[in-house]
Length: 122
Image 1 (tube, rainbow, N blue to C red):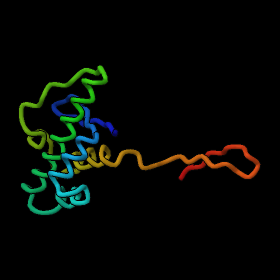
Image 2 (image 1 turned 180 degrees about the horizontal axis):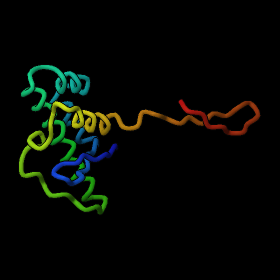
Image 3 (image 1 turned 180 degrees about the vertical axis):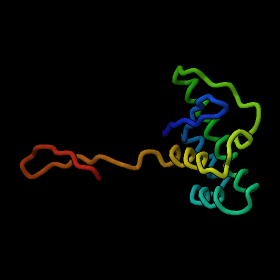
Image 4 (image 1 turned 30 degrees about the horizontal axis):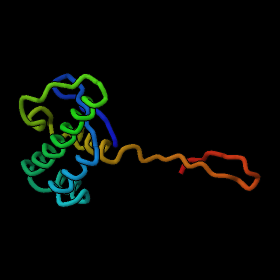
Protein backbone atom coordinates (compact mmCIF):
# COMPACT_ATOMS: atom_id res chain seq x y z
CA UNK A 1 0.00 0.00 0.00
CA UNK A 2 1.32 3.43 -0.93
CA UNK A 3 0.27 6.69 0.67
CA UNK A 4 1.04 10.28 -0.28
CA UNK A 5 -0.75 13.62 0.03
CA UNK A 6 -2.20 16.32 -2.16
CA UNK A 7 -3.07 19.86 -1.11
CA UNK A 8 -6.60 21.01 -1.94
CA UNK A 9 -8.22 24.17 -0.55
CA UNK A 10 -5.13 24.72 1.60
CA UNK A 11 -5.51 21.34 3.35
CA UNK A 12 -3.51 18.16 2.90
CA UNK A 13 -5.52 15.14 1.84
CA UNK A 14 -4.14 11.59 1.92
CA UNK A 15 -4.01 9.63 -1.32
CA UNK A 16 -3.75 5.88 -0.93
CA UNK A 17 -3.05 3.21 -3.53
CA UNK A 18 -4.52 0.15 -1.83
CA UNK A 19 -5.60 -3.13 -3.39
CA UNK A 20 -9.17 -1.80 -3.56
CA UNK A 21 -7.95 1.40 -5.24
CA UNK A 22 -5.88 -0.63 -7.71
CA UNK A 23 -8.95 -2.70 -8.61
CA UNK A 24 -11.06 0.44 -9.07
CA UNK A 25 -8.35 2.02 -11.24
CA UNK A 26 -8.16 -1.13 -13.38
CA UNK A 27 -11.93 -1.00 -13.88
CA UNK A 28 -12.02 2.74 -14.56
CA UNK A 29 -9.12 2.84 -17.02
CA UNK A 30 -9.13 -0.66 -18.50
CA UNK A 31 -5.78 -1.33 -16.85
CA UNK A 32 -3.12 0.75 -15.18
CA UNK A 33 -1.16 0.85 -18.44
CA UNK A 34 -3.86 3.15 -19.83
CA UNK A 35 -3.74 5.58 -16.90
CA UNK A 36 -0.97 7.81 -18.26
CA UNK A 37 -2.45 7.98 -21.74
CA UNK A 38 -5.90 8.88 -20.43
CA UNK A 39 -4.55 11.67 -18.18
CA UNK A 40 -2.32 13.22 -20.82
CA UNK A 41 -4.04 12.48 -24.13
CA UNK A 42 -7.26 13.66 -25.71
CA UNK A 43 -9.06 16.89 -25.01
CA UNK A 44 -8.64 18.93 -21.84
CA UNK A 45 -12.09 17.76 -20.71
CA UNK A 46 -11.08 14.11 -21.21
CA UNK A 47 -7.82 14.66 -19.32
CA UNK A 48 -9.63 16.44 -16.47
CA UNK A 49 -12.15 13.59 -16.32
CA UNK A 50 -9.41 10.98 -16.04
CA UNK A 51 -7.48 12.99 -13.45
CA UNK A 52 -10.68 13.55 -11.49
CA UNK A 53 -11.55 9.83 -11.55
CA UNK A 54 -8.05 8.83 -10.42
CA UNK A 55 -8.06 11.42 -7.63
CA UNK A 56 -11.52 10.39 -6.44
CA UNK A 57 -10.40 6.76 -6.18
CA UNK A 58 -7.15 7.62 -4.36
CA UNK A 59 -8.88 10.14 -2.06
CA UNK A 60 -11.55 7.60 -1.11
CA UNK A 61 -8.87 5.04 -0.28
CA UNK A 62 -6.96 7.77 1.60
CA UNK A 63 -9.98 8.45 3.81
CA UNK A 64 -10.28 4.73 4.57
CA UNK A 65 -6.56 4.55 5.38
CA UNK A 66 -6.71 7.65 7.60
CA UNK A 67 -9.72 6.29 9.48
CA UNK A 68 -8.18 2.84 9.99
CA UNK A 69 -4.85 4.36 11.08
CA UNK A 70 -6.43 6.64 13.67
CA UNK A 71 -5.39 9.73 11.71
CA UNK A 72 -7.60 12.76 11.35
CA UNK A 73 -9.97 12.05 8.49
CA UNK A 74 -10.27 15.07 6.20
CA UNK A 75 -13.70 16.34 5.24
CA UNK A 76 -15.11 15.13 1.96
CA UNK A 77 -14.66 17.64 -0.83
CA UNK A 78 -17.69 19.77 -1.71
CA UNK A 79 -17.01 19.22 -5.42
CA UNK A 80 -14.89 17.19 -7.81
CA UNK A 81 -11.13 17.33 -7.13
CA UNK A 82 -10.52 18.61 -10.66
CA UNK A 83 -12.66 21.66 -9.85
CA UNK A 84 -10.10 22.72 -7.24
CA UNK A 85 -6.82 22.31 -9.11
CA UNK A 86 -5.34 23.37 -12.40
CA UNK A 87 -5.19 20.08 -14.27
CA UNK A 88 -2.89 21.61 -16.89
CA UNK A 89 0.01 22.31 -14.50
CA UNK A 90 0.94 18.67 -13.95
CA UNK A 91 0.89 18.68 -10.13
CA UNK A 92 -2.21 16.48 -9.96
CA UNK A 93 -0.73 13.97 -12.40
CA UNK A 94 2.52 14.00 -10.41
CA UNK A 95 0.60 13.36 -7.15
CA UNK A 96 -1.32 10.50 -8.74
CA UNK A 97 1.79 8.83 -10.15
CA UNK A 98 3.81 9.29 -6.97
CA UNK A 99 1.03 7.47 -5.13
CA UNK A 100 0.55 4.73 -7.71
CA UNK A 101 4.22 4.04 -8.39
CA UNK A 102 5.57 4.90 -4.96
CA UNK A 103 9.26 5.01 -4.27
CA UNK A 104 10.88 3.14 -7.12
CA UNK A 105 14.31 3.17 -5.48
CA UNK A 106 15.02 -0.15 -3.78
CA UNK A 107 17.75 -1.29 -1.46
CA UNK A 108 19.04 -4.82 -1.92
CA UNK A 109 21.09 -6.71 0.63
CA UNK A 110 23.79 -8.93 -0.86
CA UNK A 111 25.97 -11.49 0.85
CA UNK A 112 29.60 -11.46 -0.32
CA UNK A 113 31.61 -14.70 -0.39
CA UNK A 114 33.01 -14.10 3.12
CA UNK A 115 29.46 -14.17 4.55
CA UNK A 116 29.21 -10.58 5.80
CA UNK A 117 26.08 -8.78 4.61
CA UNK A 118 26.54 -5.61 2.60
CA UNK A 119 23.89 -3.23 1.30
CA UNK A 120 23.92 -1.82 -2.16
CA UNK A 121 21.27 0.19 -4.07
CA UNK A 122 19.47 -1.70 -6.82
